[in-house]
Image (tube, rainbow, N blue to C red; front, side, top):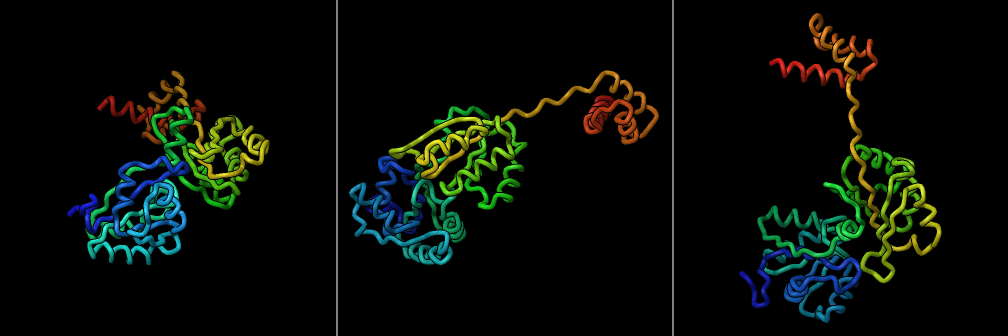
Length: 292
C-alpha cells in the first residue's frame, strides 16, 4: 500500500544516484529518498552529502551502512525493517547499486522472501562513457574491475581476445591505471584503440582516445591524467575472415570421401593439400547434409 508520500510500505527501492555531478539525479529518485523510512548507503557520510546537496533532511530517515564488508549482516536488519512495513532505499556512493557496487546480495535476499523490489533508474558510468566514446559495434561487454595482480589480469584480458564486434568496458582505479594499460597493450597489441573516460560528469572530466601503443605516454604526459576513477573502452575488432578452401582441395576431398570414412578422408586431404583440417571437416559435413 502506498504511503501518503508515494512510496509503498515494505518495499526496497534500488535508487541510482549521480556519478559525479549532483544534479544528475532524477526527480523520482529525489521523491523516493525524501519519503522512505530508511536509506541503506555504502557510506553514511556520502549519503548525507547527497541529501544535503538536494536540501533533503536526513532527520526523517535512518541511514544505515551497507558495504562489501557488512552486506550480509546489514541485509538481515533491512529485511526486518521491510517485514515491519518500512520503506527502504538502497543507494551506493555513485551510480546504480549492485553494478560493481554492493547491493546485489541484499536484493537477492529480499526477493527470496517475496518482498517487493522496485528499481529507480539513474546514472551509469559505463553507459555514460559509451555514449560519448563514438565507438560503434552491435554489442558491448561490461566487465567491471579487472583482477589487481598483473598475471591474473593478463589471463582475463586474453580470454576476451576473441570477443569480436563488441566493445569491452572496464572500470579501473587511479593507482592501477598504468599497470592495467600496460597489460592491455601486452595482450591486445599497440594498434588497438582505447578510450579513457576519466572523472565523468565532474569538473575535470576527460575523454581521450588513442592507440594502446600511445596510451602510457599520454597518461604519463600529465600526472593529473592518472587521477580519478576511470572507465576504459576498447575499440571493437572484426571477426577474421575464414579463408576459402582451394578448388583443388575440394576436389581431392570429394574423391577421398568416396573411398574412405569421413575422418580418414579429411585427415588425408589435409596432409595432401596443407589446408586446415578443421575447415575441410566442416566442408565435408556440409557436403553430407546437401546430399541428404
